[in-house]
Length: 144
Image (cartoon, rainbow, N blue to C red; front, side, top):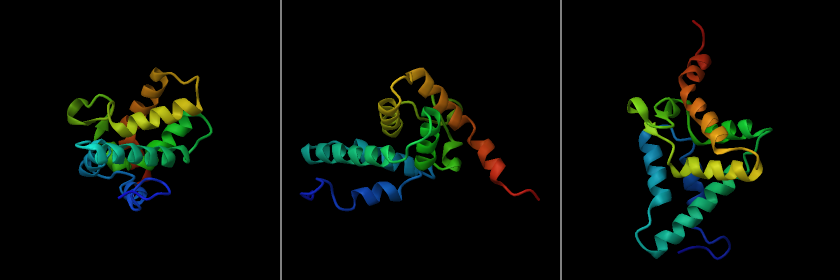
């Protein structure tokens, strides 16, 4: 049952934090399933509080600009190894990110903080961040 103080299961926040950043497709699918599992009323309530917990976590990330905020959120949610197998539209066998719950939560949080940011701005920054994941991985490898 939910606690009276914050109406979420005591380990829900821990569950979300332990699964971030997502490091595999399986982790991403598990997290998306967790956020979208609505088979009955209790699960509907759970979904709302799961999403609220995610929103609170993302709101705390912040950033100096909308682009910095998006980058910081994406780094918190996805590892570079996971990100290299993702793309905005899911082309070339990649995971389609455009319609995921997490991406939409980030978009809503950023839009609230940076009201002049358009959907096009957001999509460009996010798609570029996923596209450049392999470059970030290469840049972190030590030179031999």
